[in-house]
Length: 193
Picture 1 (cartoon, helix red, strand yellow):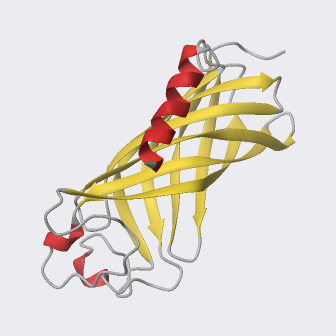
Picture 2: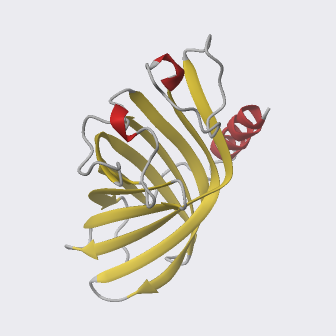
């Protein structure tokens, strides 16, 4: 049911032109997963940087679109990610939410946002020895596992290279289970004076 609500909200936003002619388009490399207390399934993570799986490299990309509702203050952002997850299986997330400026200077900016997020991955129950913490939904017969979050959020730091191109780094604070970092570019479709 939450997935249907998420899709309905996304459809309505596109239908009423709230996300047409975006103010910026972004692409980021995904990234680095952080399990602050380690992970009980670290032995299944081939790209972990430590024995406990605190830091794990992920390979993939996040594409985003952002439309400002109030100039450089409040926006709606959509993001779609596909990546190789911590167990080197296909995963991703779909997000839509509101964002607001935290600070902005000539070269630097920080934005924070929150909104519904659907996270999905190939079913880890297929992996031998997997210890199920019941975070993701999906049974043994399912091809995919998913988790719907009403409150998925992001902090995005931006370094402005020029009027159109910005370097950007996103931090997703899913404490205590999982946090993540991604890095990339934002292209402004309409330069702001």
